[in-house]
Image (tube, rainbow, N blue to C red; front, side, top):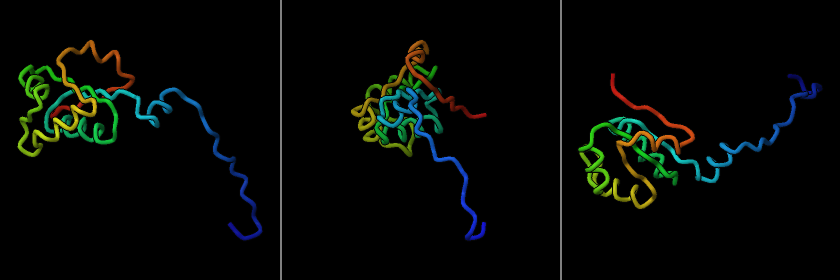
Length: 110
C-alpha cells in the first residue's frame, strides 16, 4: 500500500454474545472429558485462568482421588489439585452434569 492509499477496511464491530461475555467474565463453566495425562493438565490450566471447571472420567478411582485433593499423575502435585478445587474445579463420572456446561473438550489418547 502506498502512502496515498486510504484503507477501506471496516472498523471492528463489538459483538454482544452471551458465550463471549461468559468467557470474558470467567463465568463460563468448562467441561473436560477424560482426566488422563492430557485432560487433567488442561483442566488445571483453565482453573488457573479462573474458570470453573468440571472434569469427567469413567474411572471412579480417578474421580475419587481428585475429589479428595489427590493426584495420580507424578508430574502434578496434590497441591495443584487442591488449589484448583478451591477455585471451583470438580471431578465426576456423572456425564449428565455435562449438560450444565456450554462447551466441553474431550481428551483421550489414541
